[in-house]
Image (cartoon, rainbow, N blue to C red; front, side):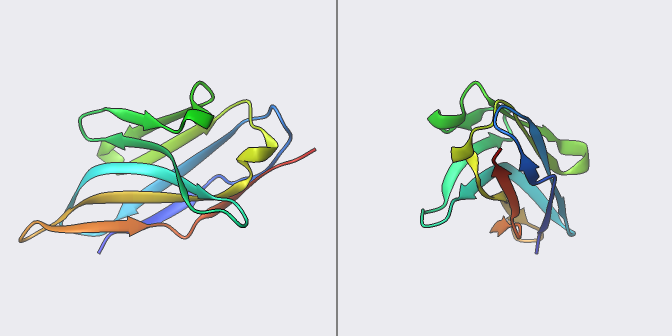
Length: 121
């Protein structure tokens, strides 16, 4: 299995910035895509940003121009730089990784435990 560990959440004032990180660990795996989702109280989990192995990225419309996803493939890590944060960005942010396990190229879809991001004055 692939384990994901997130870091970097916290409390920030509106207009501030935070950087989330997520490290994937395990043995015998490759990563096709890593991304971030979030879930606010009373709402469904939603995509924030995803980075595929071909370096293509996709962002939710609500975060375009404010958030940037990046990956360090050598370290199996993904980051989310969040700028110009708004109260509506408040949520639990989850890291996600998808790929295959070896041997046998068995697909996996792993999630982190989540990290709280609160934007409030």
